[in-house]
Image (cartoon, rainbow, N blue to C red; front, side):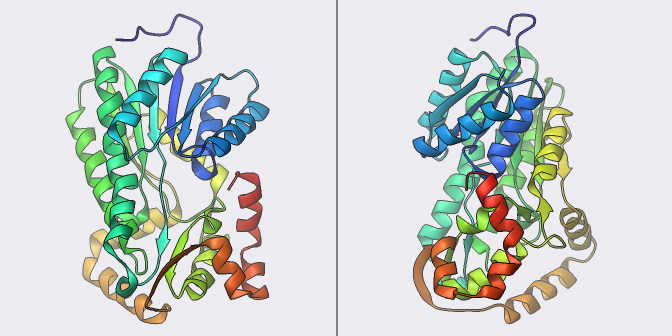
Length: 316
């Protein structure tokens, strides 16, 4: 088992799913707070770009990269081994990797759910199994998982996403209870929509262009989405202070409380929203960039201006 870091060295944080977007912001924030960081994703090129971006912001940090599919248990164990060999014992581990699939239930298939669950439920489980026992043996550690308000309230057109996120919420909240008294904490991070620029990476099906037309502005407009830098900082605060649950945005605070007090009302409201949103039966899945080209709407392009800026800044 790896030994604690020598006095005066930087603690080590591992962020799974950190080559771009929110994960990259979280890793950069941790580096700025004095951590050496390990980042992973499935794409080697984006990992190098993410590493370079972190070092531009925090030149003194050590940054370890490794390609890893969080759905693969052995790859995640290898990631933790590689990180501890390169940087030292992992003191902080945060799972951010995710996929957003937007489309109606009628056009969804088994593989949509399988992909979402593999990344956003098995991913956190695999990371916890690989890193938390090492933390408990040392008597200290911080573990966090970015879930979603979609793991507390299930909105229409995001059913595979919410299915995985509900599972992740249950896992991390239960893990937090299991770890009581060990010196290790597990934080369920619950954000709402954030301007990370991820609308271009989201997957759309049904009528892809029409689904993009409502989702992209919702993920970009200030009244509906939160600044990603502020969100990342709040997430790191929640994990480092060991909070069991970190509600990040006004939407996550309001949505969680309303659903808890009036679940039937919330379900009826989601049903009304579903009636208003576009449908479609096509099983073809396209990314946000392709959906935007098909839509070709100057109005939607204007409404996503802030999201597009985030795309460029956050390596999306």
